[in-house]
Image 1 (cartoon, rainbow, N blue to C red):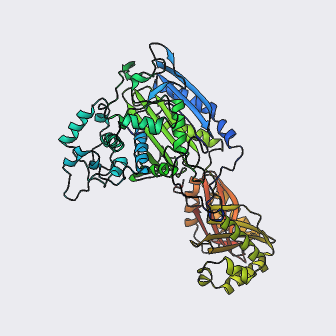
Image 2: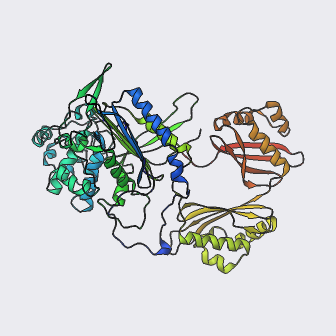
Image 3: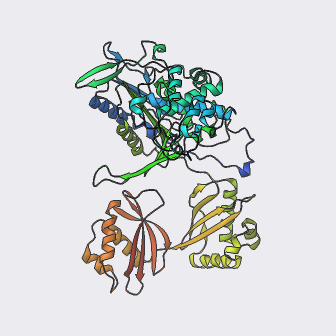
Length: 625
């Protein structure tokens, strides 16, 4: 039951969609202490995303044709509505029966997240603990011979995160769906070989999730299938979802196919059995929309009622890394950008980050006759899901292309963090102090460390000196909020600007523990000229022109190497002055076509010649070009 990316249905979920979970039942915090949920701030976001629909249609039609996938269906959901759907090809080739949004495909290993949901529901109901030994619920495991004398007993958490120590078993696991409960019990009694010590490494195990299905049954006192139907599928309204292909109306079932040379061959439907919890599920586009919408609805954390069937906090618990896998950094071509993939496995779900996306949650599925994939971006409110009826079709690249099409619209942006009431109050107080210092107000906003780290007299002198140099300052810039208790903003002054940053302390009430003020004067003409010239040389430094800019005795080799290396960022132009503004130098943000750079320039005042320049990647992201 392959966990690699596979797909043929695309579905986007943006915003907070679908049902919500149970989660904590404690009273919401007082308004002053509340962490406000982040928000989408672009009113045109949905319209921008919708503009990518024609391109996504083209991508998936072309992919199905190239890959000879018999039938595909896809849909796009934005903020809780199915904004776009389409289908290509046949669910049944011999009958020439077309695919539509109600066609039911087998989704293979995507079933694992359903099994994990069942476990989380039982945990939340107090029926089990994730750190319980699995043998407590599956006695056949009590006789396992562990690989080392110091091996821990396998826990439910180990199985959920593929850390049980069992060998990767995709080829074998694919053919076990029809095994009976008695046959599976006999397998376990005979023993299971270990490839690693439990709890030490990630290794994908279908067997482990089949055991989790047995735990669901034994902990709940009802068959896995019955528990899943009553506690997950029915509450979510997933009426087309089942573990048994024979239950699907013949007019809606997608037949599975494999390629044998140039010929498409029927793959017989595998029946449901004891291994169903690892990969037996079948579902439709509409049902899968409801399912992924539910999982995506865990973001953002908020005070709204948590109605279930599994709480939002538990859903978020599933969607974080519990067992890491090796990180990779690569290029898809020698002159392409670096690509990061770092993460691992949550509970029934893969979790990773890339250079551009800090949090991706996904899973794939592959069985004889079918390939599927689902992926979503929790902080962006967007999900991509794919299903098709060709064996092990790999849909990862076209899913990437669909996300790229959405990104090009400008609408694929994460929610923006919002400040707490305490942070807003502190910002206003800091602004008043910069406009007119008051010792009493300064004491009132300060955490106990603030004036120990730098005495009040020193801070008062600093503020008065800035006011004397830059004149009156006004807080007319945007509030850049990192989280509910940390933010930065810009103040425009008569003769320059200020950059102000504060962080509140873990006290009640929250007071200011860090307060940084960076004065930014207006660029002097020699500095401005040097910055413009250096930005223009990035990627193709003119050695003669560069040497003419440099102060006597400064070797041009090191600056030239920096300018040449910076070609990875593309073309650049001066943007924001970050600090300085004196005759001696400044730090300036360069806006480049493939990211930003920070340029620091020091100049000899009398001659206006550059004594030093330094180029650094801007920001704290995980990748540079």
